Length: 222
Ligand code: HEC
Image (cartoon, rainbow, N blue to C red):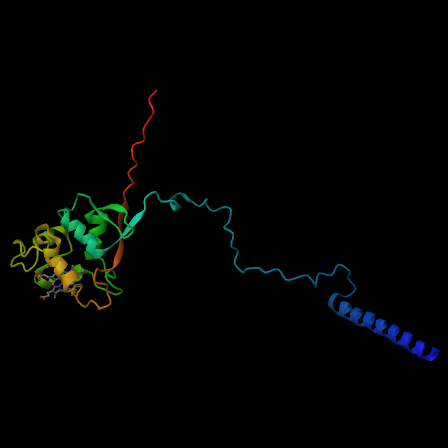
């Protein structure tokens, strides 16, 4: 029995000694004889590029991040329609109700003209209307100039540069106009238009929301 006890004890002591030696070897190989060893600390995650702006740069101006006016969204058929129905002026503002039901106001130069002179607007890769309907009558498609307000007023199928041709605005009745017919009924403009362009044209940002009318509050008179 004593023999057996001896065997158990010596095995335990041997085991503990092996552990101490084993961890000692690991410690010495990693840290040497240095007790302030940092090796076991987790590696700090660092980006290779400093993300903090240098303090010498001018302070960032955040004042424009809170715009005071909200832009409206509307389908092109309703936008051009509202403009034509309001008398298609190039200077007066006109009003419309946007897709959210908000009352909005817009003008020709900022909101309507881009639809005729900007490319990539009706569908990705679309030409601008004015690239075909341009000022030079000898090359302008349908002898129509959509590059300027004056050109639009002169109309289509013009015989000479000065003489007016066919009115494209239907004399202010949107549904009777050549614009409405070609863009939203026949849907052939912009020429080469793919069939997946929505019937009412793309939804665009236009105009600004009108301030909601604040009902006059009753002021108590004492
Ligand atoms: C790739 C060239 C091209 C582009 C881009 C184009 N058109 Fe046309 N457009 C034509 C041609 C060609 C005709 C004549 C079609 C015909 O005779 O049947 C025409 C005819 C018209 C007409 C009818 C004129 C009339 O008297 O019958 C209108 C209105 C019109 N385009 C408006 C537009 C508008 C608005 C856009 C932009 C959204 C546009 N077009 C973009 C080539 C183009």
